[in-house]
Image (tube, rainbow, N blue to C red; front, side, top):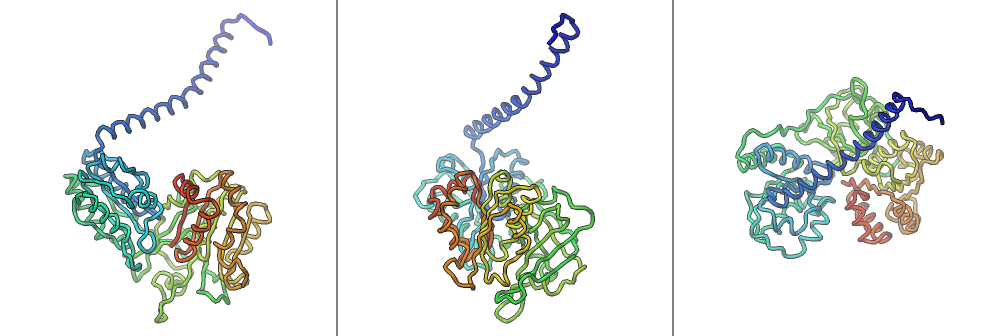
Length: 454
């Protein structure tokens, strides 16, 4: 290196060094500012707790309504903080003066994943809350016997602790607009404002049914169809992420949309759905599944809207190994993740899948085998009607416990998609046996154990 006393050169070197230092310093300052702001916000919340908006959501409806509730309070100048229910501690409830609970129910009366830890930790013991004023918005589905079971249980527990209800519990059947409108009306009254933000759901869009094919001809089970829907114009990566849902409005019931997992990614150019035809005892078909698989013609318009399902997205798990577990039409949500990973050339994917017969019910057989041949997929299968000890997907786990523990130890995330009855509980029990209940709870708390079950 040749040194020089040229002042211009020295100034250039100094300027370059200063610029480099500034580039390095800016991210540090931004992060430091973010942390200081978060610390100030936490200190302010502790000094003047204000209101808490707590949600427990399974597919995102309660979370979305909680966000709208928070916006209404803040518009009225009311200090409020948003919290997932399982993040609340006993001292949070004992310090708070007003808490608004927006909670869904999982299956027959259970807490959703976002509230299970709260239910197990707090709702099993006495906790005096005489100072607390609260309200409950309970989301449910009257198709289940324990309609809004968790919301009712939470309301009853709060009353037993001496908390005082601001107004009677409001129950919502499948996102019914009238009940949500009543919640909004009560909230506006409490906040002293009628100038609330728009709570209307995104409008439906007209998509085209471009393709439909039967995936399981000859199956002993109900017919399963692969549907492809297209929209005018090119799809963008921001339209949806793997793990998200669509809500389909069938002509006979525009007020009761049906939700389906999206089995594709925007790069595929179409939204793929996997729809099992539902039949009633009298031989009639389910409104949505019957229309989508039997009545709607290819080329016909389908009214649907995309809906983010943040609890089942990859997000922070995108760079991790994935253990994907599901059965039946649950392969749809898992296929979305596999296609996202394959599009990025990512391996480290392990699929455990169960159905009836290998000869008729191996949905997306060729596609999954191709991923395995490329080294992007480990694949284990269970067939309930083919005989053998491993009949159901949960039966696959005990013999693979060592591999399961090794993957989890290396940072893998677990995603479960499929039927609520039998499969979800069976898989949960098998995972708890293999990993330990505390370890499984820790995975759930950190977002590494996610479920989309129905």
